[in-house]
Length: 424
Picture 1: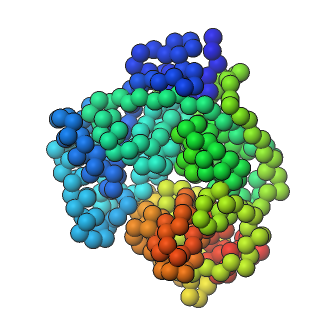
Picture 2: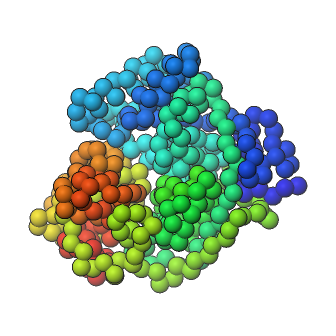
Picture 3: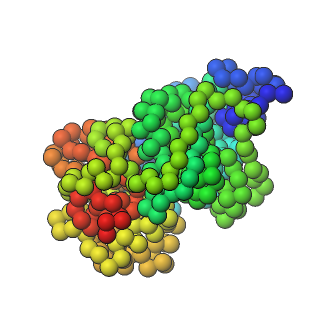
């Protein structure tokens, strides 16, 4: 009997033609049934056009096609309003159960886990590269182009080349200001931005076992920044409890088989590791925070599908309590979903943020992709809890973006330079 990695196990379970004992070996092409197909306000319109162009009339299942308007919301201009109009009309014509816009919308990859729309063992495709986020729940989830997603909408199936897997094991104990963001930044720094190209990253070890699910979602979200097809975590009791709270029932644990074969196995003892920062202009350009203490900032952004969840807001608020944002610096906070926004309000964090001098925006991708709510001018420098720092990613080609976790971001907003929270 073959021993499967998480990626092999999930793809084999979804294969239209049973993969068999040895049928999910890396490199094999499998046609698989899909549990969920996703698009957003940027990627849905071309998918809608492709859907019509291929002669499709109805989506395969109106409960399994999800559209989330999250990048340019509220609509920033006429072009973005037209994009959303196309998406809204398609959702209405197809009678989709899950179309999110306005007050019920949030950043897609934070919203879907929160609402229980994805879970362990699922196979998900999305017209967004950070669809890999759902691997934090033990799902095989990956981004595809809008045309492939259109085919998935119509057929409920897609083809996959079974990827090789790289196992990343974290040992030791995390420090108080180190979390999932630092673990994935270390991984990207170790592998490079193409070191896991068309491979699955599978994370384990005692540090991962103790990591809250929101931290795992952060890590899975950035697997693609190492070129990975997916980032995967075993679904354990922590995962099942998270899913139960999201309204799901019937989920089961899923783990790799003992003896599963990995292309490569990386181990890291994180004991004593300080917070990490990705420097311009690639996520692989990772340095310890202590090496960047003289880097001045114009803007700090806390939010996104990477670090806009409640635990991230709590981390930031702990740093901001009784402190002020540095004069002349803009600190933008974007809770990722209406649920997170409400929890932030109910917990009194909104007062903490406002008293500190932060700008609080709606649940939105905001400036992460250089689209809205915090664009950088030439020569400006930002530190963000987002996932990419390519040249021009957040505005001007002459701007710079650094990436870090929410505690480093908040501390840096207070001092105006990149700062280790321990220094406060």
